[in-house]
Length: 87
Image (cartoon, rainbow, N blue to C red; front, side, top):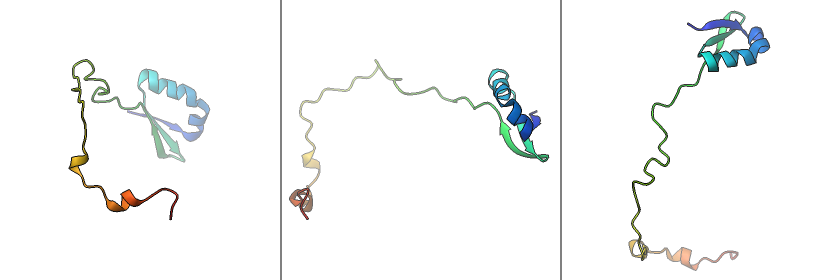
């Protein structure tokens, strides 16, 4: 159950409240004139581990000597005629 604090109290004790959230996992509901306006709580942890570098050392890309893809497309004649700086 989140603790309820006023905006004025939050403003005065901001750093200690953030410490309580990060160290103890507490949650606070901040109110203004008795109405809730914000919630201060811990950030949810990732469900899945980071994937960057997960396959390092397991997968090796094959070496390709001739990697020519020009046969897969037809160049646009307008683009081949265009020169930078000319209008």
